[in-house]
Length: 348
Image 1 (cartoon, one colour):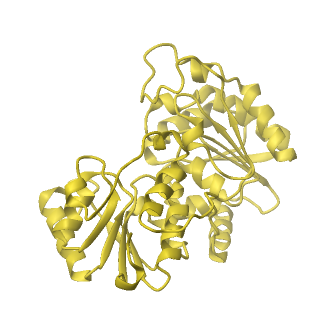
Image 2 (cartoon, rainbow, N blue to C red):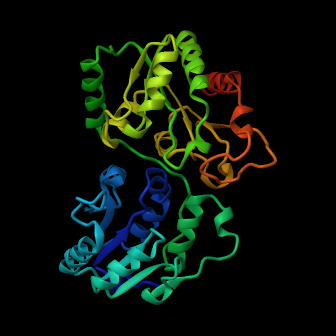
Image 3 (tube, one colour):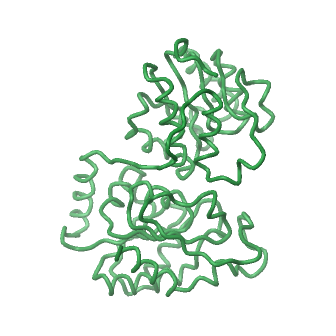
């Protein structure tokens, strides 16, 4: 167990993906409760940092800049530089929510005296407090996976609920952004996130998203906001071209801060199993989540107003990036399935 009396400066190594970062929120809450007097810094990639900028549990953020060859922390030289930067901070301990061996190597090189985390990826010898991953833990919801690790380090049991509270300036940011695109306050907004970073097996068919957008736009007299990264632009472009709904295509046009602000203005959100799905659940938006190849038990959104649409298929969840047969898990989900669920969750 980690002793709060001896730990005044604590580093947390974040996970790298938006959805995973959202699902660590309960574990980070537990860490803060265990170390109420400590200064807690999180090491995170820029695209997930916004999750922690609004967290009351986090005092400081260090950006891990290793995206591409030009990142200051890329390559061996960049990792050595990061280790030197962390060493200069004189942390008393590091809790590694990320499972990779690189996190253990970097914190070891940084001479952080206490290094704790799961003993995954062959890094057990590099950790001073190595937590064995018990059998079956990966079949629990991902929030429990992180919570069990920090509880093994002495952190208290906390609720696995996830909630993101946006500061007031996010509302102003969203209104300014929408006004700049000619969208008035009296128009209902529906968000759709048709992408998924892990691979195409997680993505419902774009032509069905286009049909759904048409139905939702007409039924709710709403404008459709299409969310996603620059990598999702081809998908969102195809949806925008195929639908007769009033669409604003935001893929690649927002960072997470702007996306969260705009999502908070939506009356309904539709998404595949993705990072933005978890954000929508944490914002407690009326949410319809479409699941195919992934496990709805371990990565379901935890928002109180979330519905999952999926069909029991003998080969699902396969957890593959690409389907090697006929994509039946997603093809079996009809436009009416999702539309009906959308109407249901809004009516609630």
